[in-house]
Amino acid sequence: MDPGPAMSINNPDGRLLSIVVPCYNEEEVLAETLRRLSETAETLEARGLKVELVFVDDGSRDRTRELLRRYAASDRRVRMLGFARNFGHQLAVTAGIDAARGDAVVLIDADLQDPPEVIAEMVDRWEEGFDVVYGTRTDRPGESRFKLATARVFYRVLNRLSDVPIPLDTGDFRLMSRNVVEVLKSMPEQDRFVRGMVSWVGFNQIALPYRRDKRFAGESKYPLRKMVRFATDGILSFSAKPLQLSVTLGVLSSLLAMLVIVYSLAMRLFTQEWVPGWTALMIAVLFLGGVQLICVGILGEYIGRIYREVKRRPLYIVQETRDGTTVVRPAEAGE
Image (cartoon, rainbow, N blue to C red; front, side):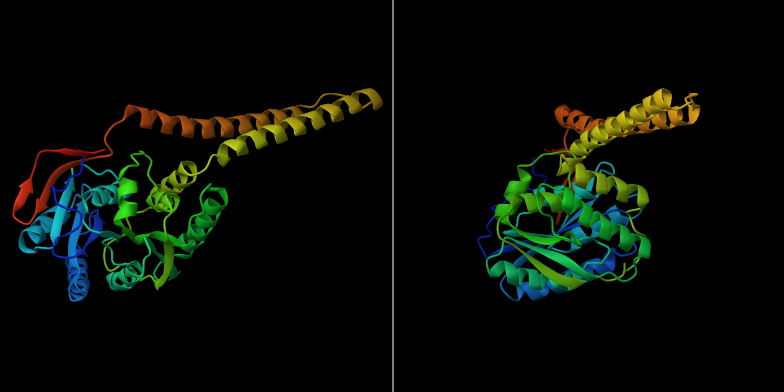
């Protein structure tokens, strides 16, 4: 169900650009985010585009919702969706895509690490005929060496494992045409990895290199635990190779066990040093047990995802939406 009010996709007064901004506890940065997005919108409107700003509050616990209500009431461009609870960044992005009414949709986080000024360049590429313009990070100041190193490894491992090529060093900051958006809206999978889904869709895509900025204010909403979960979603949602890995581990452990058996028989038949020792036995048991647990864990991840899919629960629950003076409070669910 589209949480936004009904409206023609193609604006009769000209093309419409939707800028989707997921937010979670961003009260410290929202005023500056809105200011810079508004400046970008004015620049684009001078070129004949209309712009809407779709903010999605992902169940924030600070004053984010209150500020967004105020902005929606005072700024004609601003629309706000408020979740009933925290559903996660990827589902906030999904809700914004579902609600967007533009001929093209831009995804950008509220923390201003992705500069809103780059959106104008994305629009240039879109007007040249590209359906997806994704930002590729050339520099990432303000981030720790650990985060930079793990991000670099993640993107390369993901690309090696994925059945679909996914651009390296690329986040969710991107522009998508209405054709791509409509396909994404038809993909209701629960464990979402939006950048991978956009790559899977195909169409005419192009990279746009840019320099990422430091976070303007506040703290990162992706601690190590969420980063690990996000990486797991990316790998398991776009590849069956971990299952193949479990088979490989099983074969290797079986071969190693055979070698140990041959060694044990040789020691028993051809030497006098055949007193059985617990060391070799414990190594074999622990190794095989570890491999089995790894394989069971991989299977469990895939089965858990099947379990979540077959329940057919809505992806998110919208508690309220605000579009200017219009307020909709009955909960609406994304499909």
